[in-house]
Amino acid sequence: MSRVKSGMTMIFPSASLETTSTWPTQGEWTYADYLRLPDDGQRYEVIEGVLYVVNAPSYEYQYTTTKIASKLEQFVDASQAGVVLTAPFEVHLPDIAQPVQPDVLFIPADKQPEAGAQIFTGAPALIVEVLSPSRLRLDQHIKFGAYEQARVREYWIADPKTRSVIVYILPQDSREYAVSGQFAPGEIIQSAILPGLQLAVESIFVHRGTP
Image (cartoon, rainbow, N blue to C red; front, side):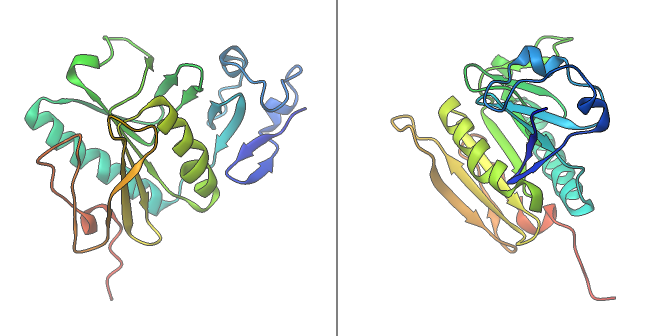
């Protein structure tokens, strides 16, 4: 039985997966194999033929994900710019990843999925991933490369530990991400994809005040 990647650690998946019929080796997973996975509450992703499992999130992780999604949705709804979705929702990046399930994604109005769609095929305009200790390599390297190759125009990495956000943009004439900004508490996150967005960094992280 092949193992499943979780960040930089190789772990066995749930018992239900271990007892299932033969699974492909890492690097050879397909979407058809993904569809055979048990509905065990785990969040699985397949990138470049490698199966990854995302561990259950911490409070800080879930708080930041929810806050970012809520604030982006408020801005997008007011401007009718498109839709904001959260995991679990399948995004297929043809020939790269089938599927990935970004923490938060923005799809412009002219590309939003039809009613009833369970999959979005193509590159969202903006993706946000929130770091956790088990996902550092996955978000900062594996997904970074996949989103860059798929030409996701803007990629945010939010880190609850350092209470900071790095925003990467993909220039029209480039194949590589460039840092648009590194934002810390007291600063305002700005987006090239969503001009006019003003998102205070401290508003998306858990506040640990003095009792």
